[in-house]
Length: 300
Image 1 (tube, rainbow, N blue to C red):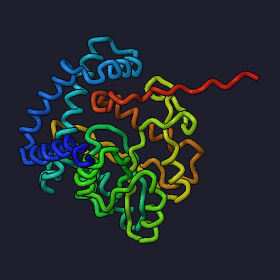
Image 2: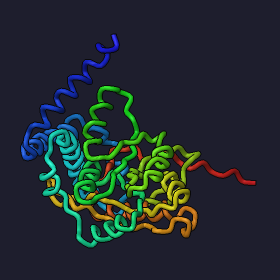
Image 3: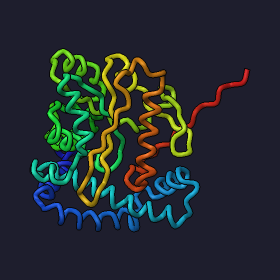
Image 4: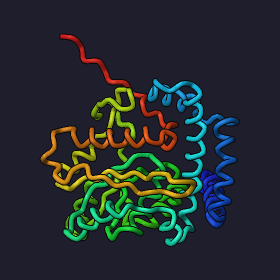
């Protein structure tokens, strides 16, 4: 009975493996068609996307908002098909499609030469799934991304396979602390990769103004940086064309304990905001980012 339950998942897994055999140019054709279906036919989370965009960019008119939304769906499906391609893509093609500026590369290599490990904070921007391979193939660090396991065991194994291809180890969010201890004791320089723009519960959130809205954000990455003393780097995968990216790297701090409380979190979110304003359609607008509101403090 358990196997019967997962038949659709096995079919999806098989389809993904077949799609991964196709050239990127053909996957982008499929992506264009899928984007049209999601945007105009299925209207996948259309209300959420439009509401998020209107609230985030009150100065833009409706025509501009609709243009960003349409491009968002294409960028989203590109990410989906490009992620599937990770099952079969060659190292050479990743290197050809993902550049890193020499000044950014030099900064990180200096850290490696000094045996310094760091925390890489990124958002759902550009193609975030290609950050581990682009980093692994351009830099000598061990890459340790943190992920949230999926409930579907078959799809979870598939995602672990394609996400783990270019990582030293994929670490479940619940085991982050244990993994940090292990890698710090190991002594080899490593990067702990954290997608840090997800939505926490209001009780554990740190609240900031982000994209013209009061927004709850995770404080966990900052706590990890403070407890370990690891430098924190902002990472963004800037889209340069379809299937072509620039890995942008910026230092947030090399001295976490010297920062005021909340300053690391705020600086990350401000850098992310700047990247989103630079290319609005590249962020994950279908996520219910503002579903929680801060509880008002009772007067007294």
